[in-house]
Image: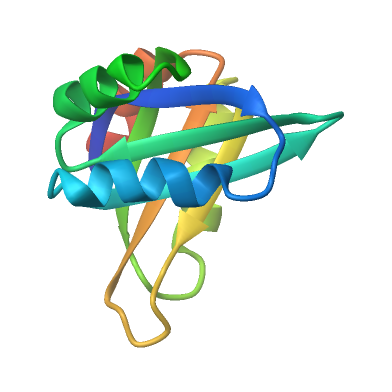
Length: 134
């Protein structure tokens, strides 16, 4: 069985400047909030930071109070066994049900047994139902 769940991801938008990630991570670490997943994009002068933390509500409130432009959005978070082909089988299961993956990022320590996959797709709720039964 795949551990699949719907999570609220914080999406922060800012002017792309040196130190934006340092500012965000300093604020969260000072509050004792762990990062589970981070993705940063710099596009045409804008920094977009995607965050999953150990305490989304506190992180959201702290970032909002600090004046950052933030929103929340639904993402699918999966914990997958770290062995060849598991992501392939997972993506094939979604494709068979005509669910398109829009965004995906994965983190797995080299010696780790489990990988963290964060994705958005054409139907997050249906994807979770499919993957939980997989």
